[in-house]
Length: 179
Image (cartoon, rainbow, N blue to C red):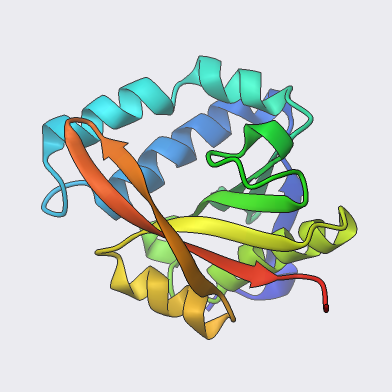
């Protein structure tokens, strides 16, 4: 088990773009590569959406927040949050989106995903957002259960295109403000 004292969670900088690029590609492939999806669809998605150029541009966008979860030796996982017009769905400026929350396969089941989720909620509260939301693939039952256990509720669906495969994501949200 990894101890909290052995890890750090810091906002990623442009200087860390290569490290973020590497972990982004690796964790996406680990999560959604074969046999879950075809090799061609996963490679097409990664090559079109997780590029060094895209990550570099996003790291300079004030509406996008990347956080790297690191040990002394390597990046263990990362978090990508979108606000305002950078969100993948137009839910208004009073919301914050968790677009990506990934942990390297060998470090899953160490409560690291919970640390990243807590960071997303903390930033949402700090930015005075009404709710935090995300889209999770309808076939990713493990993730859906994790979010439900964390208080998220389904509220809609949207389309996610992985290569040539049109998939459905369940949109889930967690209210951050008491009405």
